[in-house]
Image (cartoon, rainbow, N blue to C red):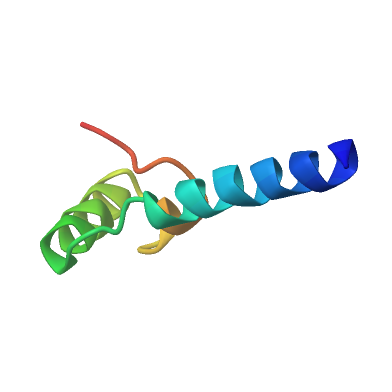
Length: 54
């Protein structure tokens, strides 16, 4: 019974994390790409890391 409750709790927490994940707007993506290029990085450098901030 404990295992079932722990599994259910884990699933609920995982679902909450997925549902609250931030989605970037096209404007934000365009700005991130500009910043990447300014720092002489590939245009999509923000995808694999935290977006570089000026």
